[in-house]
Amino acid sequence: ATQDELKKQVGYKAVDDYVKSGTVIGLGTGSTAAFAVERVGQLLKSGELKDIIAIPTSIRTKEQAESLGIPLATLDTHSDLDVAIDGADEVDPNLNLVKGGGGALFREKIVEMCAKKFIVIVDESKMCGGLGPGFPIPVEIVPFCHEHTMREIAKLPALAGCKPVLRLGDVANNKPDGDKPAVTDNSNYIVDLVFETPIKDAVAAGEQLKNTVGVVDHGLFTGMTTACIIAGSDGISVKEA
Ligand code: DER
Image 1 (tube, rainbow, N blue to C red):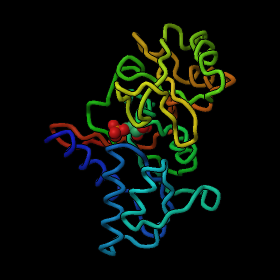
Image 2: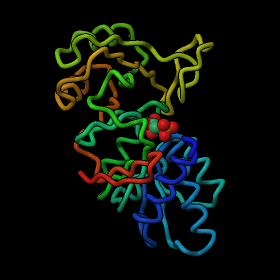
Image 3: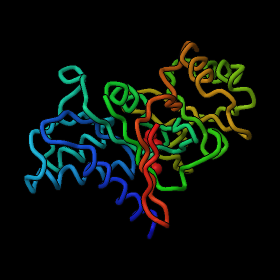
Image 4: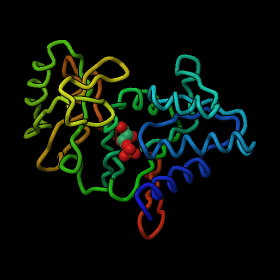
């Protein structure tokens, strides 16, 4: 199966197995989550799903959901979600995640923190032994004096050895020709932290990042995953936290 077919398999399975009628759901961002959004739209259209309120985790997911006729709301009116479904850039053996490859980590985290269940959908290429080397850790920072903030991040003990790189071009992915900083849905910048070796303590790293003035939030999603649905060439498996 192609990688797209694997992403579709897990996106559809997450909705079929975890989304019930009459619930409030969080819709993730990225190419895998887009299949879950597609499936919600399909089931609402066929009548197999009813009375869903969805909370999008990015402007582009909101637009996709609107195009599919999925009823939308925000956390201001609906902050008690039954389930949220989203992709990830890396998944470690404890189901801690790196997210933010698509630049949506802040809205993803604030929404997914409100969900009773957080279902992660990945193809097997995202599985890793330790977070860091396989995918730079995205961090959302305020544009004001961003070079100063990047220097402060590089000093953090739990992130020793990281190389902060300002994301340029389009926020959803690093377009090489982009010479201007990528800007998030929240009008902030993204710094990608490049690691040669795995992060030893992802929880401590997250805390130190959150305590750094200028940092809005980061792509370490620790202790949040309820279950991870993994599509591999030999089929689909589900890992529960
Ligand atoms: O930006 C994000 O957090 C996305 O969910 C990312 O982690 C996964 O995107 P993908 O499904 O397109 O690989």
